[in-house]
Image (cartoon, rainbow, N blue to C red; front, side, top):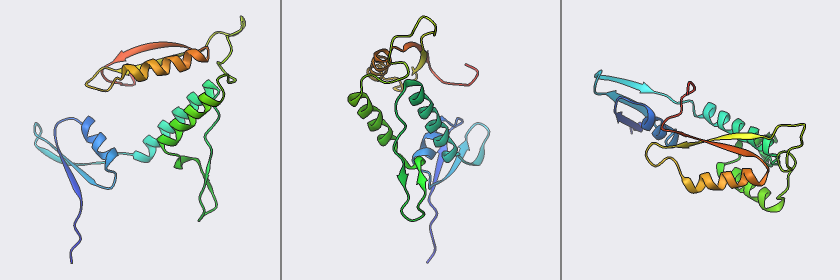
Length: 163
């Protein structure tokens, strides 16, 4: 019996949709054929690194908003605590539960004093395709406002570090 390899082949000159496919299908090998350069390349995506960067950003915002850190899970086999096992649903539910159970939290929940400047956070709303969701934007702004945090909306079609 021969083992079959699962491979996705992406036909395009860009990486945006390929990266989305690689994130959604991390167990598949990804090949990209660029019709302009007529090259076939194997593509990789650092999913673990991406998830760590996103988690660190979420935890940083939670800290700035005074939202308690997520509960940690214990790995029964190794006996170690692994906060990275928390899913995005767990994080969202934790934030919402914290919001419902304690409307007044430490940082940013009280009006700023004369001695400290108010906290201002930028919110990027994607304008390319169906990425931006005005209802979610409104909810985020309401949550920030309820904590005394000002927000600035930035509309971008794509996010690049230089922008």
